[in-house]
Image (cartoon, rainbow, N blue to C red):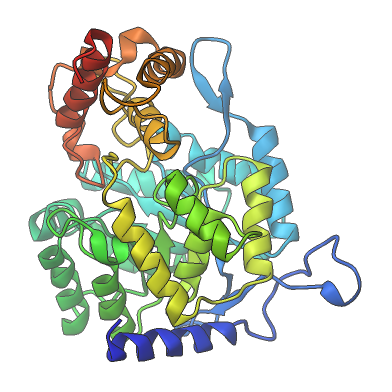
Length: 450
């Protein structure tokens, strides 16, 4: 590690350790008696003084159940239970979008949160006007979000994924239709407290939005970026830019940062066996997920780290991580960089299971196919060659589990490469190409031609 980087990380760790404001509005973690009472780690927004929990609740992965009609709906009872527990234990930032879970996320969040005092939590949502960027549709989306979330104002409002397409896409979605002026007016009237954007894109696209900020054409109150110890230095550099660059650019401008995908859609909670073993050797009591979350929160410009928790178990584990927060040392960050380098050697699909690509017009379960394939690799149950030890066992296990995880009519070999999914993927995955690769892998397994 270079001396300059070491000093920067050491300083970040020191600041992070002392970053919880004394007057943070959080409760003590319940169930911890005596001297072991710890409060949720809080961060103070330097722009407005908001006391925000370092763990934020990402509402993109609410638990789902069958609706009895062949579809899937959010399990509202489970959501209510998780939101109650989160608030009780100091989590006060909830991030949603009209696009999440095929339009169901905001309503579920609103129903759960409305049962609590409005000043006990922060709501973040987005203008996700990907399909129809007309002024009429965009304004309707804004006011529909207020209604769905049962609120008169948004604490944090984001232009959703404005990196893709750069200046042209930004002007089409927000400038030419007058929507950016509309949002600034809403901010003036108090319906938006903080206006920012979430970013997926290349370096030159990010630089353009920083130029807007520097020139005063559009000053950003905060920014949401994808950051984790893999993307810190190992983003592809074409469709996504390294998070260390994003962080540095935002940090030097004093722009508060919200982190998305700290676990890469769960992949950093289920790391390959060899990497998990090395983590356990260093910290037997800590999970792979806690390593990833602590990495993000070690950096002091980070306001909150979003985690899309689907059940009580990860919620409780993550609260424990932030309730007994220990920032990473420079040596531990260097260790994670070695783990990230090793991760890049695995043939994983960079899918975060966001489901933006769904529904597929041809019925393909795109994220389900990718998640099953990635899990086989990380679990070490990936057949690589007919000469491999236990090849027959691995082959059978993959084919049987694939049929159980994804219905045969929704598997990769049914993709016709229409390309409808490509513009929706925030990771810019060449989805048809990856589906063909998996379909070919499955066929090679069946024909024993690996």
